[in-house]
Length: 180
Image (tube, rainbow, N blue to C red; front, side, top):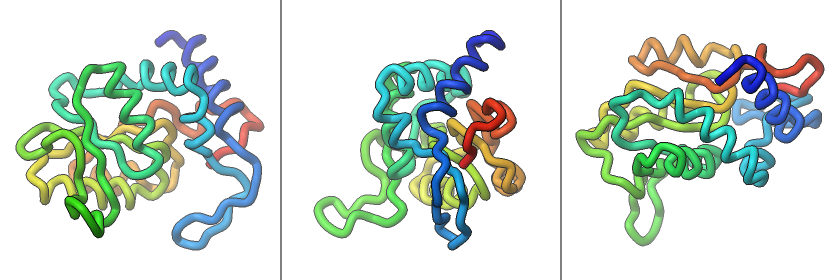
């Protein structure tokens, strides 16, 4: 991707999905701006363009892409369409009825899985999903996201053998754009 294309995509992502409004994080902290992955997913052209750009981040030896509920699901489906790789979906908790599965879709056992999510802040959610997939027999060593916030996630993941590959970092967003 050229620098001009990357800047244009960052501007489109910021305009569409970076929102100035009150947002409560899972740990109770309150932000005055955030990244709204649902706005990105609701824009078919932007979702396609983000997936096409993220396709370049997928390691060559990847066998399965795994989307984290809920924000990673539309991204991983679009990325699967862009790469031709099969997709799995990872829940935070096993389904309480039916199959009672925590990992759905493509078989992950023994296959090189790349995790996909919308935003990485502390890295805790990506690490928890990595553990679930590793217990299921999937060697996970890479995580992709649309946006990385500098909140320690990269370091945490690196300490557990996961390389974070963000499409954008907070620094890539146009100045004045709301950050998650």
